[in-house]
Image (cartoon, rainbow, N blue to C red):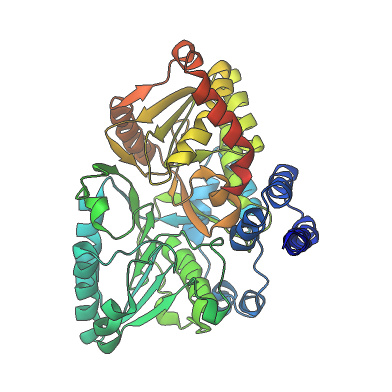
Length: 475
């Protein structure tokens, strides 16, 4: 028996060459080596389930055969986005160069919107989305990480059923792990009405899908190719503050129109093709924006199919660009060394750097790990606020008085490298000010971390933080 266990233990070391060939960051590689070698069987099983961060399946390789962007550019090759070009030319040279930098980082062009509307809670978002679905004439495309099978989820399914019955093309793309509470049975009426549904990736061993990693964390909704929503909100009763265990839920979504909607439609079309193999390329899905361009907008995409970590680099670029303030709200805070250094450097050069982090969330150990970074950030002059009146799930970043970013990505390893994420960056003093007022209000609801008091926390708390911190790259 002992011999068999010993053989099995050393057999788990077969994962080590695979780990090394992935060429993860050294900290992540060492964390997984530690888990595989020193936590027999459990460490190897965990690596098998969540350790890989590359998609090597044929569907991802096949994804390179189709790009909604390249097809759209061929179809509309006679038109140019003069409005966006005009806005860019009126920018100060430094701002224009910064947007050009982000375009190179994200391999996407700068776009524009006529209207950007900040939806500061679920009542704003849900009512606006419901109205747009009711008004839809051609198509409704919805992409969520979480869609619960509760009264809120069923209400939106009924809306989609009604839209499909009146002839609207409805496509619903959900993550199989995030939306595990939505059973196939609840979707039968939607499919019967003519709706199109797919899991982005489901946790289904029968279909060779074993991995908990590589989730589609994007929240993207498009109606008639004219209106798009991007942010952090999903579909569920907790987002309406109806879950007594979670309490008030703070989140933000952005509603946009104009040229950027076509850029976001590209994102949905590529994700839908990845999941289903169906190409969305007809010109009806990409109507030409006719309104006046008023705001410069840039789509920031992240995921395991983008190896240059564009969201992380975009955040670091914003931190480096700021000269006055950087205010960040995030649901989860487990920064890597690059973002940690950028936060410290910004604060050290006199920038007003503030972090708003949820005091509680659905993964309590992440709060503990996140606090292990507080000491060095406080020493550098970063102000840290813990949201204590409920759940902060919003992902907001403000730089100075003109740049703002809202989306699905948290400041953690998972959002930077493992999940498919989507953020919108916009150049707008008006919207920056609106989000700043929201954050100022939320700072008032928080407990600011005092450096001296934080240093006096119990030894057992410090030890737990220190013990969990090496696992950060695995979380």
